[in-house]
Length: 260
Image (cartoon, rainbow, N blue to C red; front, side, top):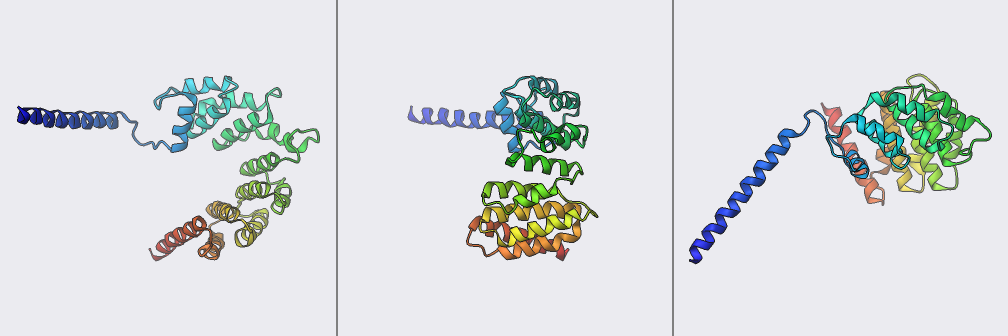
């Protein structure tokens, strides 16, 4: 009798494995091909209560929900839902909405290569009555404008790299990564500030961000790759383990590329 019970248990176990494998195989077959879903996108879908196969129209409709608007704009950016452009422009140009909401919509439009948002958003750092002047968010706006090719507010970002508050320096160093241009001299100034931060800032976290901004500019201006490598070399033996590991890993990648 014990033998029969054990036999049935084994059979049930095997059947269970087969069912799970079949189920997994079915799930994989149903997944959309050619598109990788990032962890950030998965997180946004959960936050918005949406399934992965949600229709684009449903996501665009969430832009009308004040509590979900910002997350929806981010998801639209990840999914490259270009049909949301008119709605996003409507948000950008709505003076009754908070600046942060309007800037969020502008960021998504910028991701799409759209520049129609620039005039409305630029007023946030040119209007003396702007509510975000003299705040870290003004630095972000200057950096966003730089992504669109408007470098006119470089000095606003540059002076913030020496601020006594680390979070303001952090915001500025991130924004500097957007000032990459093949020929504009503003890029050389940005590189100088980033190199200084990457080499000498007392906070490992900011040296890390500076290196990433240098890498961002190097994608536009490959000839400055040597500055990236120099910054990595300078930090590979940092007492900060995360920074040291990152630098050593990237130096290895650079070395392997040069050998090919």
